[in-house]
Amino acid sequence: MKIIIILVSCILSFFATAVMSYIAMATAIGPWITPTVVLSSVLLFKVFTGHIYMRNIAFATVASSVGGIVATALGFSFPALYFLDSSLFDAWLAAPLYFIAVIIGISLAGGWLGMWIANVAEHKLLVEEKLPFPIGELAYSMMVAASNHIRKAYELTIGFLGTMLFCVVQNGIQALQGFIPKTCTIFGPLTLGYVCIPVIRFDLLPIFWAVGFVTGHVIAVPLVVGVLSKILLLEPLNKLSWFSHLSPVEFVLAFCSGMVLAGAVSGFIGLPKQLWRGVKNIKKKINNDQVVSWSKVHINGLSFDQLIELGLLLVFCIFFLTYFGFSFLAQVYLLVFSAICAYQIAAIAGKIGLALLGRYATFVMVPGMLFFGWNSVQLVLVSTFVQIAGGVATDILFGRKIGKLAAIDHTTLKRYQYLGLVVSAISAGIIMWLLIRHFQLGSDGLFAPKAQARRLLIDAKQFDYWVLIIGALFGHLLKKVKINPTLVFGGLLMPVNLVIGLVFGGLCTKLTKDKEAWYPFWSGVFAANSIWMLLQALF
Image (cartoon, rainbow, N blue to C red):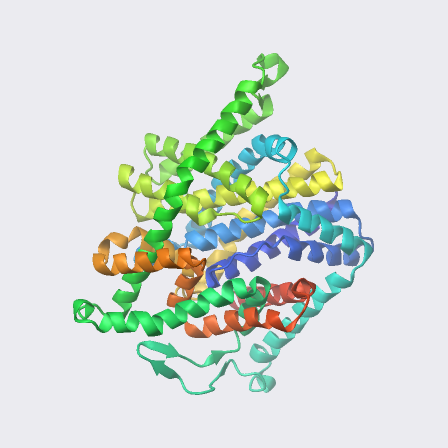
Protein backbone atom coordinates (compact mmCIF):
# COMPACT_ATOMS: atom_id res chain seq x y z
CA MET A 1 0.00 0.00 0.00
CA LYS A 2 1.41 3.36 -0.99
CA ILE A 3 1.97 5.93 1.74
CA ILE A 4 -0.03 8.67 0.03
CA ILE A 5 -3.07 6.39 -0.44
CA ILE A 6 -2.84 5.27 3.18
CA LEU A 7 -2.67 8.89 4.31
CA VAL A 8 -5.70 9.93 2.24
CA SER A 9 -7.60 6.85 3.41
CA CYS A 10 -6.93 7.67 7.08
CA ILE A 11 -7.88 11.34 6.63
CA LEU A 12 -11.13 10.45 4.89
CA SER A 13 -11.92 7.66 7.38
CA PHE A 14 -11.72 10.22 10.18
CA PHE A 15 -13.70 12.69 8.08
CA ALA A 16 -16.49 10.19 7.29
CA THR A 17 -16.67 9.06 10.92
CA ALA A 18 -16.87 12.65 12.18
CA VAL A 19 -19.56 13.70 9.71
CA MET A 20 -21.80 10.68 10.20
CA SER A 21 -21.34 10.62 14.00
CA TYR A 22 -22.94 14.03 14.24
CA ILE A 23 -25.62 13.45 11.58
CA ALA A 24 -26.67 10.10 13.08
CA MET A 25 -27.06 11.63 16.54
CA ALA A 26 -28.63 14.89 15.38
CA THR A 27 -31.18 13.57 12.87
CA ALA A 28 -33.15 10.42 12.18
CA ILE A 29 -31.37 9.99 8.84
CA GLY A 30 -28.24 8.06 7.89
CA PRO A 31 -27.36 9.00 4.29
CA TRP A 32 -24.53 7.04 2.66
CA ILE A 33 -21.28 8.99 2.92
CA THR A 34 -19.70 7.17 -0.05
CA PRO A 35 -20.51 9.80 -2.75
CA THR A 36 -19.04 12.51 -0.53
CA VAL A 37 -15.78 10.66 0.11
CA VAL A 38 -15.44 9.91 -3.61
CA LEU A 39 -15.41 13.63 -4.41
CA SER A 40 -13.26 14.42 -1.36
CA SER A 41 -10.67 11.84 -2.40
CA VAL A 42 -10.51 13.40 -5.87
CA LEU A 43 -9.67 16.76 -4.31
CA LEU A 44 -7.07 15.35 -1.91
CA PHE A 45 -5.25 13.38 -4.58
CA LYS A 46 -5.29 16.43 -6.83
CA VAL A 47 -3.73 18.50 -4.03
CA PHE A 48 -1.20 15.90 -2.83
CA THR A 49 -0.08 14.38 -6.14
CA GLY A 50 -1.44 16.55 -8.93
CA HIS A 51 -2.91 13.42 -10.55
CA ILE A 52 -6.27 11.68 -10.34
CA TYR A 53 -6.11 7.91 -10.82
CA MET A 54 -9.19 5.67 -10.62
CA ARG A 55 -7.28 3.05 -8.64
CA ASN A 56 -6.23 5.50 -5.92
CA ILE A 57 -9.74 6.96 -5.60
CA ALA A 58 -11.23 3.46 -5.32
CA PHE A 59 -8.86 2.36 -2.53
CA ALA A 60 -9.41 5.56 -0.51
CA THR A 61 -13.19 5.35 -0.99
CA VAL A 62 -13.63 1.74 0.11
CA ALA A 63 -11.43 2.36 3.16
CA SER A 64 -13.11 5.55 4.35
CA SER A 65 -16.74 4.63 3.67
CA VAL A 66 -16.51 2.03 6.47
CA GLY A 67 -16.20 4.92 8.93
CA GLY A 68 -19.51 6.35 7.79
CA ILE A 69 -21.51 3.19 8.46
CA VAL A 70 -19.77 2.46 11.79
CA ALA A 71 -20.56 6.00 12.97
CA THR A 72 -24.17 5.71 11.76
CA ALA A 73 -24.75 2.43 13.61
CA LEU A 74 -23.20 3.84 16.78
CA GLY A 75 -25.12 7.11 16.61
CA PHE A 76 -28.44 5.34 16.02
CA SER A 77 -28.13 2.99 18.99
CA PHE A 78 -25.38 3.62 21.55
CA PRO A 79 -26.77 6.93 22.97
CA ALA A 80 -29.90 5.00 24.03
CA LEU A 81 -27.96 4.10 27.17
CA TYR A 82 -28.06 7.76 28.21
CA PHE A 83 -31.88 7.80 28.01
CA LEU A 84 -32.09 4.49 29.88
CA ASP A 85 -29.52 5.17 32.62
CA SER A 86 -28.17 8.72 32.50
CA SER A 87 -26.15 8.41 35.72
CA LEU A 88 -24.22 5.38 34.41
CA PHE A 89 -23.70 7.01 31.03
CA ASP A 90 -22.41 10.20 32.67
CA ALA A 91 -20.03 8.12 34.77
CA TRP A 92 -18.64 6.59 31.58
CA LEU A 93 -18.28 10.05 30.03
CA ALA A 94 -16.38 11.19 33.12
CA ALA A 95 -13.80 8.46 32.37
CA PRO A 96 -12.89 9.28 28.75
CA LEU A 97 -10.41 6.43 28.26
CA TYR A 98 -13.00 3.89 29.40
CA PHE A 99 -15.76 5.43 27.24
CA ILE A 100 -13.50 5.48 24.18
CA ALA A 101 -12.35 1.90 24.86
CA VAL A 102 -15.96 0.66 24.99
CA ILE A 103 -16.73 2.36 21.66
CA ILE A 104 -13.58 0.94 20.08
CA GLY A 105 -14.37 -2.53 21.45
CA ILE A 106 -17.95 -2.69 20.19
CA SER A 107 -16.93 -1.18 16.84
CA LEU A 108 -14.14 -3.70 16.27
CA ALA A 109 -16.19 -6.67 17.49
CA GLY A 110 -19.28 -5.92 15.41
CA GLY A 111 -17.30 -4.54 12.47
CA TRP A 112 -14.96 -7.53 12.34
CA LEU A 113 -17.94 -9.91 12.31
CA GLY A 114 -19.52 -7.88 9.49
CA MET A 115 -16.22 -7.97 7.59
CA TRP A 116 -15.97 -11.74 7.96
CA ILE A 117 -19.56 -12.23 6.79
CA ALA A 118 -18.83 -10.05 3.74
CA ASN A 119 -15.72 -12.10 2.94
CA VAL A 120 -17.68 -15.35 3.09
CA ALA A 121 -20.78 -14.05 1.26
CA GLU A 122 -18.99 -12.04 -1.43
CA HIS A 123 -18.86 -14.74 -4.10
CA LYS A 124 -22.48 -15.76 -3.69
CA LEU A 125 -23.97 -12.26 -3.61
CA LEU A 126 -21.74 -10.55 -6.16
CA VAL A 127 -20.89 -13.39 -8.56
CA GLU A 128 -23.59 -16.05 -8.30
CA GLU A 129 -26.63 -13.86 -7.62
CA LYS A 130 -25.14 -10.81 -9.40
CA LEU A 131 -26.80 -8.34 -7.02
CA PRO A 132 -26.36 -4.74 -8.19
CA PHE A 133 -25.29 -3.18 -4.85
CA PRO A 134 -26.47 0.20 -6.20
CA ILE A 135 -24.38 2.42 -3.90
CA GLY A 136 -21.26 0.69 -5.26
CA GLU A 137 -22.43 1.27 -8.82
CA LEU A 138 -23.22 4.92 -8.02
CA ALA A 139 -19.80 5.46 -6.44
CA TYR A 140 -18.06 3.85 -9.42
CA SER A 141 -19.94 6.04 -11.89
CA MET A 142 -18.96 9.09 -9.84
CA MET A 143 -15.32 7.98 -9.91
CA VAL A 144 -15.41 7.67 -13.69
CA ALA A 145 -17.00 11.10 -14.02
CA ALA A 146 -14.67 12.71 -11.48
CA SER A 147 -11.51 11.26 -13.01
CA ASN A 148 -12.52 12.79 -16.34
CA HIS A 149 -14.09 15.99 -15.00
CA ILE A 150 -13.27 17.52 -11.62
CA ARG A 151 -16.17 20.01 -11.64
CA LYS A 152 -18.28 17.95 -9.19
CA ALA A 153 -15.44 17.91 -6.70
CA TYR A 154 -15.15 21.66 -6.98
CA GLU A 155 -18.89 21.98 -6.29
CA LEU A 156 -18.43 19.99 -3.10
CA THR A 157 -15.55 22.32 -2.17
CA ILE A 158 -17.72 25.40 -2.74
CA GLY A 159 -20.41 23.98 -0.46
CA PHE A 160 -17.84 23.02 2.18
CA LEU A 161 -15.91 26.30 2.19
CA GLY A 162 -19.06 28.43 1.93
CA THR A 163 -20.57 26.73 4.98
CA MET A 164 -17.30 26.96 6.89
CA LEU A 165 -17.19 30.70 6.17
CA PHE A 166 -20.80 30.98 7.36
CA CYS A 167 -19.93 29.19 10.62
CA VAL A 168 -16.76 31.20 11.19
CA VAL A 169 -18.51 34.52 10.66
CA GLN A 170 -21.38 33.44 12.88
CA ASN A 171 -19.31 32.02 15.71
CA GLY A 172 -15.64 32.86 15.41
CA ILE A 173 -15.27 36.55 14.55
CA GLN A 174 -16.48 38.81 17.35
CA ALA A 175 -16.87 41.89 15.16
CA LEU A 176 -19.19 40.09 12.73
CA GLN A 177 -21.12 37.79 15.07
CA GLY A 178 -24.21 40.00 14.96
CA PHE A 179 -24.16 39.97 11.15
CA ILE A 180 -25.40 36.33 11.03
CA PRO A 181 -27.39 35.67 14.23
CA LYS A 182 -27.60 32.18 15.72
CA THR A 183 -31.36 32.49 16.15
CA CYS A 184 -34.12 34.43 14.45
CA THR A 185 -37.54 35.24 15.90
CA ILE A 186 -40.22 35.46 13.19
CA PHE A 187 -43.52 35.33 15.08
CA GLY A 188 -42.94 34.65 18.53
CA PRO A 189 -42.22 31.80 20.14
CA LEU A 190 -45.76 30.57 19.42
CA THR A 191 -47.42 27.89 21.51
CA LEU A 192 -50.13 25.64 20.09
CA GLY A 193 -51.33 23.48 22.96
CA TYR A 194 -48.16 21.90 24.31
CA VAL A 195 -46.38 22.27 20.96
CA CYS A 196 -44.02 25.23 20.98
CA ILE A 197 -42.97 26.66 17.62
CA PRO A 198 -39.70 28.31 18.67
CA VAL A 199 -37.31 30.72 17.11
CA ILE A 200 -35.40 29.49 14.05
CA ARG A 201 -31.85 28.33 14.82
CA PHE A 202 -29.49 29.51 12.08
CA ASP A 203 -26.49 27.74 13.63
CA LEU A 204 -28.06 24.34 12.89
CA LEU A 205 -29.89 25.30 9.70
CA PRO A 206 -27.16 24.39 7.13
CA ILE A 207 -26.84 20.73 8.11
CA PHE A 208 -30.59 20.13 8.44
CA TRP A 209 -31.29 21.97 5.22
CA ALA A 210 -28.64 19.88 3.44
CA VAL A 211 -29.87 16.53 4.81
CA GLY A 212 -33.44 17.55 3.96
CA PHE A 213 -32.42 18.41 0.38
CA VAL A 214 -30.58 15.12 -0.16
CA THR A 215 -33.53 13.08 1.12
CA GLY A 216 -36.21 15.32 -0.47
CA HIS A 217 -39.94 14.79 0.01
CA VAL A 218 -39.17 11.35 1.47
CA ILE A 219 -38.38 13.08 4.75
CA ALA A 220 -40.44 16.28 4.42
CA VAL A 221 -43.89 14.68 4.27
CA PRO A 222 -43.53 12.31 7.29
CA LEU A 223 -42.03 15.05 9.45
CA VAL A 224 -44.91 17.42 8.67
CA VAL A 225 -47.34 14.59 9.45
CA GLY A 226 -45.57 14.11 12.79
CA VAL A 227 -45.80 17.78 13.79
CA LEU A 228 -49.45 18.09 12.72
CA SER A 229 -50.32 14.84 14.51
CA LYS A 230 -48.79 16.24 17.69
CA ILE A 231 -50.98 19.34 17.43
CA LEU A 232 -54.22 17.90 16.05
CA LEU A 233 -54.27 14.36 17.46
CA LEU A 234 -52.14 13.92 20.56
CA GLU A 235 -53.16 17.06 22.40
CA PRO A 236 -56.95 16.44 22.05
CA LEU A 237 -56.48 12.81 23.12
CA ASN A 238 -54.40 13.81 26.10
CA LYS A 239 -57.19 16.13 27.28
CA LEU A 240 -59.75 13.32 27.40
CA SER A 241 -60.68 12.29 30.92
CA TRP A 242 -59.24 8.79 30.33
CA PHE A 243 -55.76 10.19 29.88
CA SER A 244 -55.87 13.41 31.90
CA HIS A 245 -53.74 11.79 34.62
CA LEU A 246 -50.84 11.67 32.18
CA SER A 247 -48.63 14.68 31.62
CA PRO A 248 -48.13 15.78 28.00
CA VAL A 249 -44.61 14.34 28.02
CA GLU A 250 -45.76 10.98 29.42
CA PHE A 251 -48.56 10.79 26.88
CA VAL A 252 -46.29 11.56 23.91
CA LEU A 253 -43.67 9.03 25.04
CA ALA A 254 -46.30 6.31 25.53
CA PHE A 255 -47.87 7.08 22.15
CA CYS A 256 -44.49 6.99 20.42
CA SER A 257 -43.63 3.74 22.20
CA GLY A 258 -46.75 2.22 20.70
CA MET A 259 -45.61 3.31 17.25
CA VAL A 260 -42.19 1.76 17.84
CA LEU A 261 -43.80 -1.47 19.06
CA ALA A 262 -46.02 -1.60 15.98
CA GLY A 263 -42.96 -1.24 13.76
CA ALA A 264 -41.14 -3.96 15.71
CA VAL A 265 -44.09 -6.37 15.42
CA SER A 266 -44.45 -5.62 11.71
CA GLY A 267 -40.78 -6.34 11.22
CA PHE A 268 -40.98 -9.57 13.22
CA ILE A 269 -43.72 -10.96 10.99
CA GLY A 270 -41.59 -10.96 7.86
CA LEU A 271 -38.13 -11.43 9.32
CA PRO A 272 -38.20 -15.15 10.24
CA LYS A 273 -39.05 -16.07 6.65
CA GLN A 274 -36.26 -13.84 5.33
CA LEU A 275 -33.76 -15.22 7.84
CA TRP A 276 -34.72 -18.83 7.06
CA ARG A 277 -34.19 -18.10 3.37
CA GLY A 278 -30.74 -16.72 4.21
CA VAL A 279 -29.88 -19.78 6.32
CA LYS A 280 -30.97 -22.11 3.50
CA ASN A 281 -28.81 -20.20 1.02
CA ILE A 282 -25.78 -20.51 3.29
CA LYS A 283 -26.49 -24.21 3.92
CA LYS A 284 -26.92 -24.85 0.21
CA LYS A 285 -23.59 -23.18 -0.51
CA ILE A 286 -21.81 -25.28 2.13
CA ASN A 287 -23.41 -28.54 0.89
CA ASN A 288 -22.47 -27.79 -2.70
CA ASP A 289 -18.84 -27.14 -1.80
CA GLN A 290 -16.55 -30.12 -1.64
CA VAL A 291 -15.23 -31.02 1.81
CA VAL A 292 -11.46 -31.39 1.47
CA SER A 293 -8.46 -31.78 3.71
CA TRP A 294 -6.58 -29.15 5.68
CA SER A 295 -3.65 -29.48 3.31
CA LYS A 296 -5.79 -28.14 0.47
CA VAL A 297 -6.85 -25.22 2.67
CA HIS A 298 -10.63 -25.44 2.13
CA ILE A 299 -13.16 -26.91 4.54
CA ASN A 300 -16.89 -26.77 3.76
CA GLY A 301 -16.37 -23.79 1.45
CA LEU A 302 -14.31 -21.81 4.01
CA SER A 303 -10.64 -21.21 3.31
CA PHE A 304 -8.04 -21.91 5.97
CA ASP A 305 -7.44 -18.16 6.28
CA GLN A 306 -11.15 -17.58 6.88
CA LEU A 307 -11.21 -20.25 9.57
CA ILE A 308 -8.19 -18.75 11.33
CA GLU A 309 -9.78 -15.30 11.14
CA LEU A 310 -13.04 -16.70 12.53
CA GLY A 311 -11.17 -18.17 15.49
CA LEU A 312 -9.47 -14.86 16.28
CA LEU A 313 -12.76 -13.01 15.83
CA LEU A 314 -14.56 -15.32 18.26
CA VAL A 315 -11.82 -14.93 20.87
CA PHE A 316 -12.08 -11.13 20.66
CA CYS A 317 -15.90 -11.12 20.78
CA ILE A 318 -16.08 -13.60 23.67
CA PHE A 319 -13.58 -11.54 25.67
CA PHE A 320 -15.56 -8.33 25.06
CA LEU A 321 -18.99 -9.85 25.77
CA THR A 322 -17.79 -11.74 28.84
CA TYR A 323 -16.51 -8.47 30.32
CA PHE A 324 -20.06 -7.09 30.14
CA GLY A 325 -21.60 -10.13 31.82
CA PHE A 326 -23.09 -12.03 28.86
CA SER A 327 -23.50 -15.73 29.62
CA PHE A 328 -21.97 -18.28 27.27
CA LEU A 329 -25.39 -19.22 25.87
CA ALA A 330 -26.26 -15.54 25.35
CA GLN A 331 -22.98 -15.04 23.48
CA VAL A 332 -23.70 -17.97 21.19
CA TYR A 333 -27.18 -16.61 20.54
CA LEU A 334 -25.91 -13.11 19.82
CA LEU A 335 -23.07 -14.15 17.52
CA VAL A 336 -25.11 -16.66 15.50
CA PHE A 337 -28.13 -14.43 14.98
CA SER A 338 -25.99 -11.34 14.36
CA ALA A 339 -24.15 -13.22 11.62
CA ILE A 340 -27.40 -14.37 10.01
CA CYS A 341 -28.89 -10.87 10.24
CA ALA A 342 -25.74 -9.26 8.85
CA TYR A 343 -25.92 -11.56 5.82
CA GLN A 344 -29.60 -10.78 5.29
CA ILE A 345 -29.08 -7.02 5.70
CA ALA A 346 -26.32 -7.13 3.08
CA ALA A 347 -28.43 -9.25 0.71
CA ILE A 348 -31.36 -6.83 0.90
CA ALA A 349 -29.09 -3.79 0.55
CA GLY A 350 -27.56 -5.45 -2.48
CA LYS A 351 -30.95 -5.22 -4.16
CA ILE A 352 -32.41 -1.93 -2.94
CA GLY A 353 -29.43 0.06 -1.65
CA LEU A 354 -30.88 0.45 1.89
CA ALA A 355 -29.46 -1.19 5.02
CA LEU A 356 -32.31 -2.05 7.41
CA LEU A 357 -30.19 -1.89 10.55
CA GLY A 358 -32.75 -1.07 13.24
CA ARG A 359 -35.25 -3.73 12.22
CA TYR A 360 -32.76 -6.58 12.51
CA ALA A 361 -31.28 -5.20 15.71
CA THR A 362 -34.77 -5.37 17.20
CA PHE A 363 -35.16 -8.94 15.99
CA VAL A 364 -32.05 -10.01 17.92
CA MET A 365 -32.58 -7.74 20.95
CA VAL A 366 -36.19 -8.47 21.91
CA PRO A 367 -35.98 -12.31 22.20
CA GLY A 368 -32.70 -11.92 24.09
CA MET A 369 -34.36 -9.45 26.45
CA LEU A 370 -37.05 -12.05 27.21
CA PHE A 371 -34.86 -15.17 27.38
CA PHE A 372 -31.71 -13.86 29.05
CA GLY A 373 -33.01 -10.90 31.10
CA TRP A 374 -30.40 -8.51 29.72
CA ASN A 375 -29.89 -5.24 31.58
CA SER A 376 -29.89 -1.80 29.92
CA VAL A 377 -26.15 -1.85 29.12
CA GLN A 378 -26.37 -5.28 27.53
CA LEU A 379 -29.46 -4.37 25.51
CA VAL A 380 -27.78 -1.27 24.10
CA LEU A 381 -24.60 -3.21 23.32
CA VAL A 382 -26.60 -5.92 21.54
CA SER A 383 -28.50 -3.41 19.45
CA THR A 384 -25.29 -1.56 18.57
CA PHE A 385 -23.40 -4.80 17.82
CA VAL A 386 -26.03 -6.05 15.36
CA GLN A 387 -26.29 -2.69 13.59
CA ILE A 388 -22.52 -2.36 13.23
CA ALA A 389 -22.16 -5.93 11.95
CA GLY A 390 -24.96 -5.55 9.39
CA GLY A 391 -23.85 -2.08 8.33
CA VAL A 392 -20.19 -3.03 7.89
CA ALA A 393 -21.06 -6.22 5.96
CA THR A 394 -23.17 -4.11 3.61
CA ASP A 395 -20.60 -1.36 3.16
CA ILE A 396 -17.79 -3.85 2.58
CA LEU A 397 -19.77 -5.47 -0.23
CA PHE A 398 -20.52 -2.05 -1.71
CA GLY A 399 -16.75 -1.57 -1.74
CA ARG A 400 -16.16 -4.99 -3.30
CA LYS A 401 -18.64 -4.01 -6.03
CA ILE A 402 -16.55 -0.91 -6.69
CA GLY A 403 -13.43 -3.06 -6.88
CA LYS A 404 -15.09 -5.48 -9.28
CA LEU A 405 -16.26 -2.69 -11.60
CA ALA A 406 -12.90 -0.89 -11.46
CA ALA A 407 -10.97 -4.17 -11.89
CA ILE A 408 -8.55 -3.41 -9.03
CA ASP A 409 -6.56 -5.91 -6.98
CA HIS A 410 -8.90 -7.73 -4.60
CA THR A 411 -6.35 -8.51 -1.89
CA THR A 412 -5.14 -4.91 -1.68
CA LEU A 413 -8.71 -3.63 -1.59
CA LYS A 414 -9.46 -5.88 1.42
CA ARG A 415 -6.42 -4.53 3.25
CA TYR A 416 -7.66 -0.98 2.81
CA GLN A 417 -11.07 -1.98 4.14
CA TYR A 418 -9.49 -3.49 7.27
CA LEU A 419 -7.47 -0.29 7.64
CA GLY A 420 -10.68 1.75 7.37
CA LEU A 421 -12.36 -0.33 10.07
CA VAL A 422 -9.51 0.14 12.55
CA VAL A 423 -9.19 3.88 11.90
CA SER A 424 -12.95 4.44 12.10
CA ALA A 425 -13.27 2.45 15.36
CA ILE A 426 -10.58 4.56 17.04
CA SER A 427 -11.96 7.79 15.54
CA ALA A 428 -15.54 7.00 16.56
CA GLY A 429 -14.60 6.60 20.21
CA ILE A 430 -12.85 9.96 20.35
CA ILE A 431 -15.40 11.83 18.23
CA MET A 432 -18.45 10.54 20.08
CA TRP A 433 -16.92 11.42 23.44
CA LEU A 434 -16.18 14.96 22.24
CA LEU A 435 -19.61 15.52 20.69
CA ILE A 436 -21.63 14.09 23.57
CA ARG A 437 -19.49 15.85 26.14
CA HIS A 438 -19.97 19.23 24.45
CA PHE A 439 -23.53 18.92 23.09
CA GLN A 440 -25.86 17.39 25.67
CA LEU A 441 -27.74 14.34 24.38
CA GLY A 442 -31.42 15.19 23.97
CA SER A 443 -30.66 18.85 23.25
CA ASP A 444 -31.49 20.56 19.96
CA GLY A 445 -27.94 20.07 18.75
CA LEU A 446 -27.81 16.33 19.56
CA PHE A 447 -31.37 15.09 19.87
CA ALA A 448 -30.59 11.45 18.93
CA PRO A 449 -34.12 10.49 17.77
CA LYS A 450 -33.12 6.96 16.70
CA ALA A 451 -31.56 6.27 20.09
CA GLN A 452 -34.63 7.66 21.83
CA ALA A 453 -36.81 5.31 19.77
CA ARG A 454 -34.64 2.38 20.89
CA ARG A 455 -35.05 3.47 24.51
CA LEU A 456 -38.84 3.67 24.11
CA LEU A 457 -38.94 0.13 22.74
CA ILE A 458 -36.98 -1.16 25.74
CA ASP A 459 -39.09 0.81 28.24
CA ALA A 460 -42.47 0.23 26.56
CA LYS A 461 -43.70 -1.99 29.41
CA GLN A 462 -43.62 1.01 31.76
CA PHE A 463 -46.15 3.11 29.80
CA ASP A 464 -49.96 3.29 29.84
CA TYR A 465 -51.18 0.31 27.82
CA TRP A 466 -54.16 2.08 26.26
CA VAL A 467 -51.97 4.87 24.93
CA LEU A 468 -49.54 2.23 23.67
CA ILE A 469 -52.37 0.57 21.75
CA ILE A 470 -53.51 3.87 20.23
CA GLY A 471 -49.92 4.64 19.18
CA ALA A 472 -49.54 1.16 17.69
CA LEU A 473 -52.76 1.57 15.67
CA PHE A 474 -51.54 4.96 14.44
CA GLY A 475 -48.22 3.40 13.39
CA HIS A 476 -50.06 0.61 11.58
CA LEU A 477 -52.23 3.17 9.77
CA LEU A 478 -49.10 5.04 8.62
CA LYS A 479 -47.75 1.79 7.18
CA LYS A 480 -51.00 1.26 5.28
CA VAL A 481 -50.86 4.71 3.68
CA LYS A 482 -47.13 4.23 2.95
CA ILE A 483 -45.79 6.98 5.22
CA ASN A 484 -42.56 6.15 7.04
CA PRO A 485 -43.49 5.74 10.75
CA THR A 486 -39.86 6.21 11.84
CA LEU A 487 -39.73 9.68 10.31
CA VAL A 488 -43.19 10.56 11.66
CA PHE A 489 -41.82 9.52 15.04
CA GLY A 490 -39.04 12.08 14.49
CA GLY A 491 -41.64 14.76 13.78
CA LEU A 492 -43.45 13.90 17.01
CA LEU A 493 -40.38 14.03 19.24
CA MET A 494 -37.82 16.28 17.56
CA PRO A 495 -37.78 20.00 18.41
CA VAL A 496 -39.83 21.89 15.84
CA ASN A 497 -36.94 24.16 14.87
CA LEU A 498 -35.01 21.09 13.68
CA VAL A 499 -38.02 19.78 11.78
CA ILE A 500 -38.38 23.17 10.04
CA GLY A 501 -34.83 22.91 8.65
CA LEU A 502 -35.31 19.36 7.37
CA VAL A 503 -38.70 20.12 5.81
CA PHE A 504 -37.45 23.34 4.23
CA GLY A 505 -34.53 21.47 2.66
CA GLY A 506 -36.83 18.74 1.38
CA LEU A 507 -39.23 21.24 -0.18
CA CYS A 508 -36.34 23.03 -1.91
CA THR A 509 -35.89 20.00 -4.17
CA LYS A 510 -39.06 21.14 -5.93
CA LEU A 511 -37.19 24.25 -7.11
CA THR A 512 -34.77 22.32 -9.31
CA LYS A 513 -35.34 19.97 -12.23
CA ASP A 514 -32.21 17.94 -11.56
CA LYS A 515 -31.93 17.30 -7.83
CA GLU A 516 -28.94 14.97 -8.21
CA ALA A 517 -26.91 17.74 -9.87
CA TRP A 518 -26.89 19.59 -6.53
CA TYR A 519 -25.79 16.62 -4.42
CA PRO A 520 -22.06 17.52 -4.44
CA PHE A 521 -22.78 21.05 -3.21
CA TRP A 522 -25.10 19.93 -0.41
CA SER A 523 -22.76 17.09 0.53
CA GLY A 524 -20.13 19.75 1.13
CA VAL A 525 -22.60 21.73 3.25
CA PHE A 526 -23.52 18.93 5.66
CA ALA A 527 -19.88 17.79 5.83
CA ALA A 528 -18.71 21.30 6.77
CA ASN A 529 -21.41 21.87 9.39
CA SER A 530 -20.67 18.46 10.96
CA ILE A 531 -16.94 19.19 11.09
CA TRP A 532 -17.70 22.61 12.59
CA MET A 533 -19.68 20.96 15.39
CA LEU A 534 -16.68 18.73 16.09
CA LEU A 535 -14.36 21.75 16.12
CA GLN A 536 -16.69 23.44 18.61
CA ALA A 537 -16.46 20.37 20.82
CA LEU A 538 -12.66 20.50 20.62
CA PHE A 539 -12.20 24.21 21.19
